[in-house]
Amino acid sequence: MKIARIFALSLVLMIGVMLIHAQDDTLPDDTSGVIAHVIDSGTMIDNGDGTFLLTVSSPLDYAPSAITSAEFFRTFNYPLLELASDWEFAPDLEVPAVLDMGDVVLELVLTAPTIDPLTNEVTYLVVSATGLEEGKDGFELPEIEAGSLMINMDYTFVEGMIAGRTERINSTRWEGGGGW
Image 1 (spheres, rainbow, N blue to C red):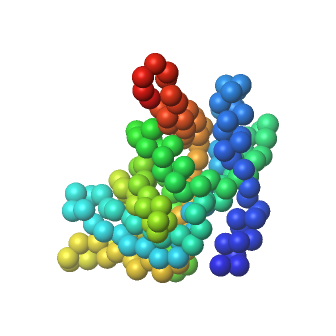
Image 2: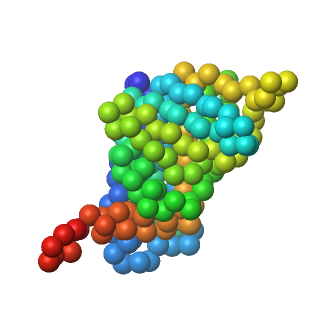
Image 3: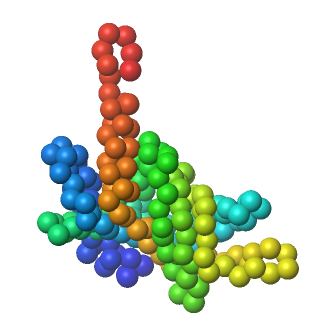
């Protein structure tokens, strides 16, 4: 928990960066970053079609994050509910991630998550997983007790999340004259 707090304190404010760059529309092509989803438990279920459901629980209601390019370096805390909501409005985004559980490290490709805001359980569809061992009865899935899910952000992902956030925010604005 102390490590999570230190890490969380060291990374502070991506949403501001996203909004600033969404306004001036000059996001550099070399933009990259990471979303660090701290995990205290979780499960990974084989869907039987080559995909998996990864459900993780976090002691935090945000994911410490950092975004960088040759022009800037910013840190921020991305609220898990906003992360899932922004990504929901950009559903075609797939992103590489690393699930690090100490003795087991998996390379994953994730799609938009869903979240239970009461429990901070986040569920990702895993469309690709490298590092799993296949046994006679299918994949041997690790027990997730603690670790981190490091989501890689590249230019395409950041642009997609900015577009998703903009779409989400605009979809909740009142249009006037009789409804939303």
